[in-house]
Length: 403
Ligand code: GRG
Image 1: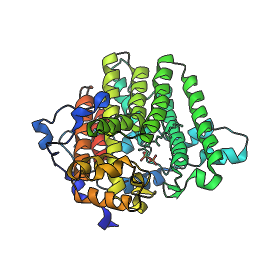
Image 2: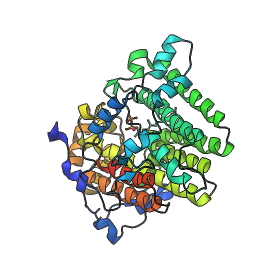
Image 3: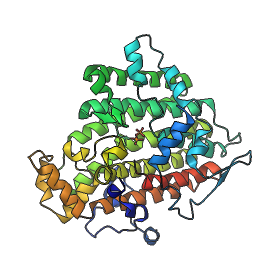
Image 4: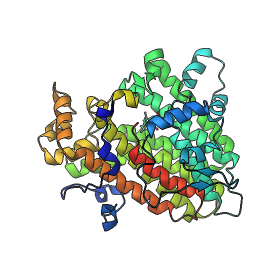
């Protein structure tokens, strides 16, 4: 297993080639601006959760920046060196509570819609949401504690995420996720679509119950973005620069919008200051884009066992992600393959070889680092708190994750 990891990825200080599109060309979603000198130096049950996180982030404390080298101290004086542990205090019973939202009388539909709420996911989104809630709450004259409505946003974010996974697996005809069969493989496509719809409708009911129209509009935007992001993924662009902007827009819509808007929603619930709302949104957007860029890297560098789903999946689906787009700058012969979405026999293997011979993986990782630095720059504008420090640490974990 160790042989399929790329340990250098954790301390990559690689710089993109002069021709790289770089984050500045990313249009609206784009980015952290031109590289600066700083860049270079640059409970299913608690046990299961910890187990899953330990294997997902085994090296998370081995590579820390001075900004993130922190031990968070709670009001009780207990010390946390792990942002997941700090966040999880507010998430006990997360999956039980989600299952309560999915109150369904039909046995089969109930089984299908509860299938992924088994504690095997990383719960990355709910963790960010509760940490952000506490980090924002101290900006208003109230307790740092997470409000019930903010905790609901954490549940809703995980439910929207899960519904989109179920639908995504239907679109991609995927067979495995999180190391188990997908809903569509077990129950068939039609029922899987309905199970995704049901989770989404339960999330919508929970959202309406919060009763805040601003928050409703922030989180419904996410659903539109998810659909538009998936649509963008169905198309290709001929021009290289347009192709990169298209990729980053798709990345924002498919992955980052949910994180950005959930962060914004809890900031709105906790604090009236629009400056704080924008910081929360920008942090979530930048971390979310970095998260997806690393996901795209892992599709080339990780093993199926590690990921719990097949790797090289993107090429097989005809998708040109960051590593491919960067590789194409070095190997322009990849252009034709990208345009025909790797549909000819041998295209997938050849494209994979080009990527592995190129700097595509390093460049994508470097780009993700720049988004994470931007996330840290944003969140550092908030008042100091253990949760703010944990969010800084979390952005680094995004870069070092192995699943
Ligand atoms: C039903 C709301 C809805 C949308 C339909 C299918 C679709 C439109 C959108 C697909 C969105 C999607 C699946 C994006 C991928 C995001 C991503 C990186 C998923 C993996 O997240 P992890 O690693 O997964 O956090 P775990 O398993 O840990 O939860």
